[in-house]
Each structure stands twice: as C-alpha cells, then as structure tokens.
Image (cartoon, rainbow, N blue to C red; front, side, top):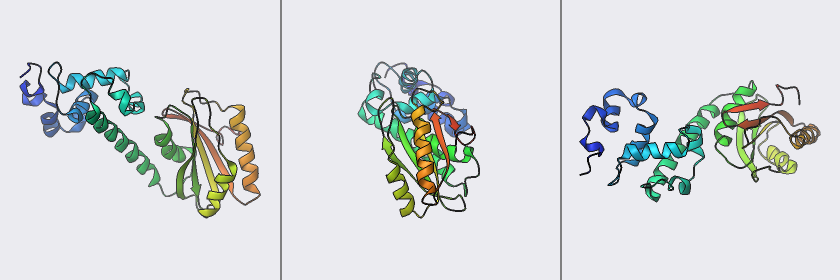
Amino acid sequence: MQSNSIKNWSEDERPREKMQLKGPASLSDAELLAILISSGTKEKSALDLARDILALAHNNLHELGRLGILELQKTKGIGEARAITIAAALELGRRRQLGEGLQRPTITQSADAAEIAIPLLRDLTHEVFCVLYLNQANRVIRHEIISSGGLTGTVADIRIILKNALLQNANKLIIAHNHPSGNLQPSAADKELTRKLKEAGESMDIKLLDHLIVAETNYLSMADEGII
C-alpha cells in the first residue's frame, strides 16, 4: 500500500471519517473533492488528486464549475468515471441553488430574478440567453434557455420569446444573458434588443420588467440602471 494513501492516515484526518465526526462544513474544498474521487493512485492519494483538480481551476470553485468532463480528465489520475462523478456533484449544486430561487413566490426586485439567472448562466463559457415568464402577480411560471451563442455573442429571437409567453399565459417577462468576459456593461446590441423586445411586448400587453447581464456571480439590472 502506498505510504500516502488516505487509509494510512489517522481516522480524524481522513475526509470521510472527519465528515462523520465534525460535519461537512469542517472539510476543506479539497477534502470534499477527495470524497467524490474516492481513491487515489499508486503515486497520489485522493486528496492529492483533489488538490491537482483545484489547481487546474486556480483554486476557485466558480472556475471549477466551468470545467467539463474532458477538462477534468486533464488531471493525471482522473479518468472518465471520476470526472463524471465530479461533474454530477457540481450540477447538483447548481440545481439546488436554482431550486432555492424558484421557490420564491414572487419576483419583487432584480435580486430575486438574479437568484434564478445566476445559477443558470454563471459557469458557461459561451453566451446564453434565458427568459423568465411571469404572471400578473410576478410569480415565475417558467424559465427556459432560448438561445446559445459563441464566445462573443448570442442572438435572441423576439418572436419566439413572445410566442412562448402567450403559450405560458405570461404577461410579464424578465430576460437575462451572460457575459463570459466578466464585463457587466451592456453593449449597444444588448440595449437595442431590450428596446425592441419592450416595444414588441407592449403591443401584445406583455411587459418587459428587466434585462439582467450575468458575469460569474455578479449581475447588472438594466431596470435598476434606468436603461429600461
């Protein structure tokens, strides 16, 4: 057995035993990842592999969430099965955060909408456009991704947005898209799309409440900025 195996550590230092004794909050990011990895290699323990993966993500959990299965496999000792396990755990975390946002009964401010939009968009490396459909009471009826673009832009079809709003019996909308560059400022194209959608919606008694731009865990609200 290799000397660096986690099995050779004292029980209170092993990630699984430590979680049982002290709870999950007591574990470091690397220790939590080591539990997912389960076992090490001849050269490295599961904890060593976890540290290598975190280094690949610059020790940033948001960057870790951006890594796909193939990227995770760039770490020596992480095969397809382990990469899939890690990716599945990260997706569950995203869905939990999204679910918490969707449990909010009504959208009363931009921060409420951001709780839904940020988990959907923050980890993506290409631009994606999503829509929240709301009823008269500002309750979210449905949310969906309606377009996906490249590294520098995406195109949202106003006709599809309004058609789907009618199908959902929604009379209010909040739209959001991400800027993978990290720049929160709306482009001229962003402002023009917002203007066109607002005007088209008004002709159908569908109100555009806001347009959010998401960059990692931050967001800009065009309504808060007075752009809408």
